Each structure stands twice: as structure tokens, then as C-alpha cells.
Length: 150
Image (cartoon, helix red, strand yellow):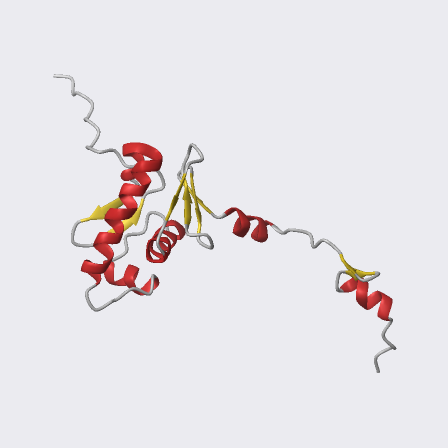
């Protein structure tokens, strides 16, 4: 048998006292959601379809661009085929290469607008496999190998 319910205790437990709502403590998960998705000095705000660059400048993204970038940013370093990206972004999966490829190109341009050439190289193409978001900008060319002593 349960004891009688004290309405004052119930109001306090629900975060209300004297008709006012109390401030709910923000958890790390809520803080992260409010701040957006962070990757390589960029912040993606999916709710606003906004991308904020390293210097604080912002660009507006389409809903599809936001979904594609969110999918890649939440799984950095993983190569995703175009069909999987299209499915995750809820794009037309019938011809994924034709729907995802142009979105990737637009995202690279917007990343470059905010962060220069390094930003453009954040989304890497793995020929025949798909696309991935590098944790950091990948170099434009392979680094030269150290010279061998002869």
C-alpha cells in the first residue's frame, strides 16, 4: 500500500514551486545538443541548418546538406558508400551517386568558404568506396617520404 501523496513534495519533484517553473539543471548531453555537433573546429547546428566555421563565420545549409554532414560528422573516419549516406539523409536512394555527389561538392565549397582549402579537404572521397569525414583536414598531396641515406 502506498502512502498518501504530498502535493507540495510532488510539485518540487516536478520542478514547480509556488506556480513557477524551476530551472532544470543542464546535463552534458543537453549542453552538447544545444551547442551542436563539433568537428575539426567547425560546429554543425542541425536544428538551424547552420554551419559555423573556425573563425565564427556561418553559412546556411539545405536540409539535405545538413543531414549528410550530420551523418558524416557523427561517424568521422568511417567510409560510407553513397547509398548508405543517401539512406541516412533520407535522400533518393534510387540513384545515390547522383544525389549524394552534388551534395558533397556543395558541402566542400561551404567548408572551404569558412575554413579555406583545409576545410574543403575535410570530406574525403575513397574511390570506389564512398565518402568520409576526416577528423582533421587531410593533406592535398601525400607527404614526401624522408630521404634515405645512400
